[in-house]
Image 1 (cartoon, rainbow, N blue to C red):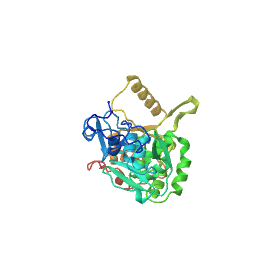
Image 2: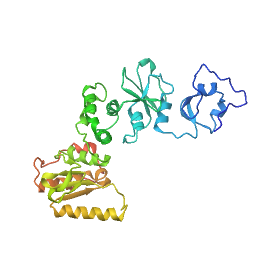
Image 3: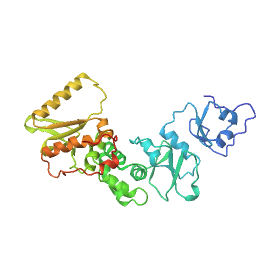
Image 4: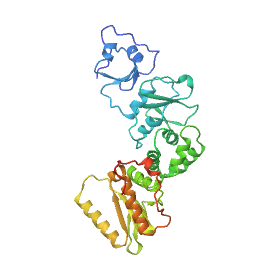
Length: 329
């Protein structure tokens, strides 16, 4: 795209405004554009996109989380940083849909309102730089997210973080233990449910459905098999003492015939060894969580697992409402 100054009464370039060359592929202010020779008419044209009031970028630029974060920060002090959901999107964390961008400034005097941007204030912060953008460190971001996410969604984030960095648990625990202010207590509560070795957000959700109902927590991704045969397999969740397995199947269709046949053989073999396997899909968690719990509860009772309550805790219903008609009879 040609971003050279237009010939129609273009203003002179103000070199003292910003020493860096004008780069329309990075978010810029209207003032910066005019000082660089972009006329108001051209700025309103198809060559540019307005991201916020007075903030633009070239129309052919992909609006990545990093670009959106840089745009949100453009009119704030240099000490401001991307935080909360904005920092989480840059890190690729699994989030529900959350509107708007979030920035944090270090002083109240630096706060101002921009449509589509939530501005927080914190006197200090742990910040790193990603692609030239100041961003919350991951431990700080976990506490920030506790002000936006539900308990289950925050545990999903925590499980994801440990899957990417299994050695990061101690650092996350230390940070949350010392944290104060908004999100601190909720972050500590969620962290108590976070586990290593979880392979997907839906596995986290299924585990949280189980534990919030007051059922004994299953072991995560344990090797199951007969040592004499050296034939071990890993399953999402299980109670080894009663040989019960729970798995989440995220496939929407049979992706490969060979894989499907392998799974059938694997499940037949586990049945031969006296194990029982319960397989669930997304609708079992989102639409009919009560029936899902009923299936699991019946098996835990039938197999006489210690510590199984006669009645489920109603706490799960606060986090997994399901459909109104989804309660077991």
